[in-house]
Image (cartoon, rainbow, N blue to C red):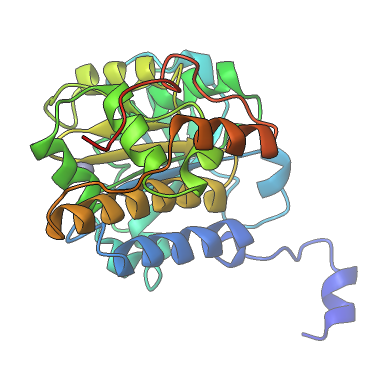
Length: 290
Ligand SMILES: [Zn+2]
């Protein structure tokens, strides 16, 4: 079909699988896999899309299945989420997006979702979908442009959760002090919750509660949850925190003794330069040099 004919034909609309949203999900899941942060079926991503963004695509206008969810998501009723599937491997999403991801709409009663596209082999959303939706509810209260929730298993951040006390201030200050960009990228710091069983509403609630103050929440001995306005921003947030954690791990491998550091005053100067306000509870504390 030539392009003029396509344009004139009101019946023609591109397939959703070819939309920039699915393309982005494929690229991000592949990127997370390549980083080594999503082995096997580790990790999950949900991406809120607006009705007007999907309206012109084909294959998204009928309800294929209705799937129950185990908590009340009525605060999000009518919202659309492109989400990765339970048990799916991030290394495969780019080759099988219609199988390993789905587009769902939160049903009116808030206790189920309508599947509009994807999961074409009978699959369903990630087992962490309640934690994602609780986080979306919380972050939308802080930020009307909230779009993405991303969970993955970054090695060095997880390693730090074995060797350090599980305190948000301690983690935030250490990560800020490992490189100049950290405080600029996450000036509010990082939230740390206790170890909890994944896939439960309890971990979802604890994560969402922490998300009132942070866009990054560490799940000790497991991984991280990140939230943001876009795929790139959320991925970048996690990347920056994990890079800081890698620098910390490398310092420990070099003996762990700090001779030089980014001082509290250096952090304040960075914030002044980039016109951002850091978490005032975290900005002053102990030096790394003992
Ligand atoms: Zn996980």
